[in-house]
Image (cartoon, rainbow, N blue to C red; front, side, top):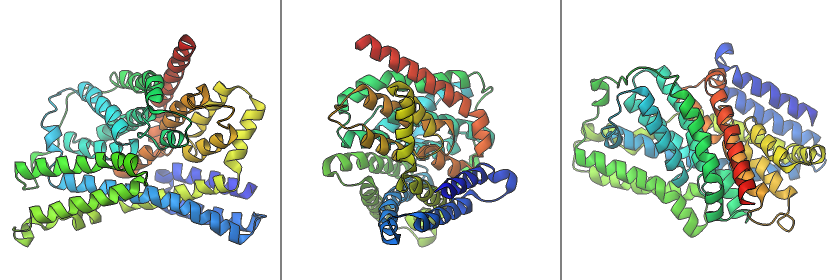
Length: 425
């Protein structure tokens, strides 16, 4: 089992050093997943059949996220190819970068509470490509989007996977989690925004006009595909709430509807005029390297959950510290390194509802910490990994430029939640 941890740490380091060593992180993640599961099959006392059963379960969880990611990225790409994001960009009148930063942060925060943090990040990063020409500026804005989207997702039952897990598991209730973690989440987003607004100087330089107007679509088509695209994404949490079926099924249904609408919209045009607007072309334009990275890193982390390392970590923290506040803060920080989903799942198993009833301190605080702690490192959250793939963000660049802002926001939110809890209890 020690070898599995060594392989994970080594591959994690290679992913972090992707740009200096010039080895694509997707290759490293796939190797990590393959080697870690192979070592686990050799070392597991349960036998190969039991390991295959665990792998199948983890693959299903990974596939659900990957299908969702592919669907969301394709919907955003189709909307963008029709010039749909001009519906928003034409209404943003900010001229200074600092003003734009607050607008984007505000939209990301509240949009992620309706959609989810990963979908919001994909949408907002695509939007930034329509607003800013300079790639370095877009990188910085993408980092802020990740922080704001994770903060916005933490206080909503449908905004973040871990909050949704706690909601479905009966650990939290809808109105209570929104009421108790909203202030902490707002502060988590506002502190980095306030600091960052002093770091960005100058006016907005939009992309070249020829680059923006390369797509010849009517205003009706832009409006239709924008509202259809956003409607398809907003439909997903509604679909999940009504049917209780997994979100990826909702996004695939939405994608099918959008595809059908696109075919009807352009069916009377000459082939060469709308070939670039087809959904099949959008599927070719999405960043499949990022999707492959997702598969590798999620399966690699799943090994740590399957072999009991993450549950053991939670139990060790409980035995050594015994202080719920410290334990949950540390779980949030650890979620910047490993996936917060298995960490929260392990914690849900450690603290039974009979002893810690719904809306207890530990569940509320965990929803905040696990939802926002992943912002500290670029591969600590699904939103971060999506942004990393879409804008080619370097691990160490993010750790140096965005990580300290996320760290400050995280602990400011922690302080706000603890003060609020003590005042109300």
